[in-house]
Image (cartoon, rainbow, N blue to C red; front, side):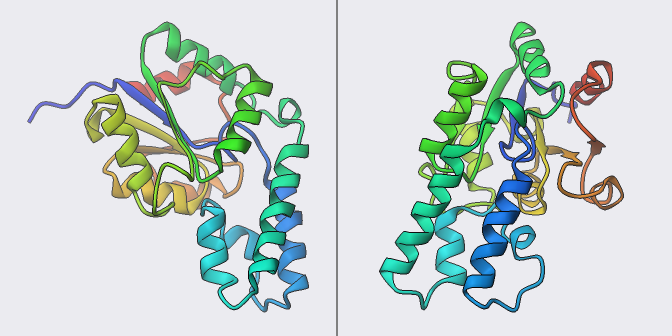
Length: 216
């Protein structure tokens, strides 16, 4: 079988387009402490999961009021961030390059659409992506491949036409399970860790010539 040409580039959001790790680490560490969780690195463990999945898995015995309080608090954090100050270096330029070269591009995130719209508005990306998959689009979040499978279906492409940029282990697993070429972005995990699970790695998007090699 002939090797397929890369036609499509898919991005995660947090840790790929914007570096929100510090804000989420602080938020979830406080939530874990308030609930007396005995789980080390809780924020890292849940990275890439939808909020619904986190609540269902880790807050199953909490009251409806407690669950709603977590949802509200998380939303307040997301709405308060100035995303223009946490953009991953070079990513906007890379996205513009892909658009100019007529690649199909998509966003696949576990974040809710309200947060996604804030990010895209702030970064001037509201009309940029050819498909956007949010937590409302799917029943099962990362590491389930559903989001990436839906993205390729929406775009009318095959898995072997897709390159995915992901930073979290759950996101990398989701794209891998969807049989796509995964590039690890070392904003959350180290290059040494990522290289064992990905096609290649980058620290950010500042080296356009290097990024082009992933599209061959």
